[in-house]
Length: 83
Length: 83
Image (cartoon, rainbow over all chains, first blue to last red; front, side, top):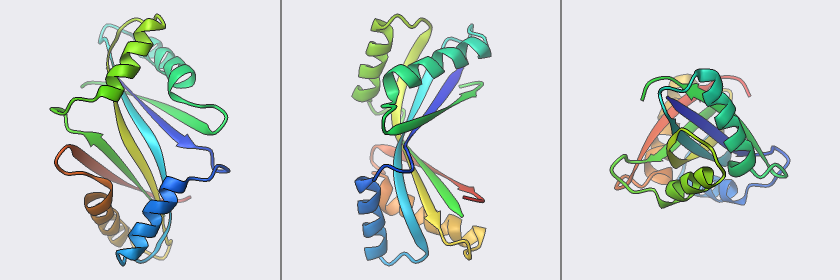
């Protein structure tokens, strides 16, 4: 079983890396791009013997305790069955 | 309209950051975690006047040309309507 964790900056937090990408995108001539924000993405492979409820609980705890800085970031967890 | 780009290391590429997280997770006593891999996540806000086809085309090109190192990374693009 696989858990996917998305970590994004809170909307109120400035994202200089996203701004830099936005600037590059505009310099390269792309039109109609309003904003770019960067986040992090984690794939956590869990033992298949775990139930979906246990997997979600473990992934939520890992996301909250290890992967996210709660002052400036939000997280979201998804459970994907299969590989 | 919003385009989401996921950039992940190719499966054959070592991910030392993911390995470090995996090690931390195990040190903290989590059981049943087989592997952790880290990737990047981008939210690209596009003008609402763009068609979904144009938005996808622009996002694919940005993902390919700017956000991904094709030697070691793969990317995936999703178009999300709304905010």
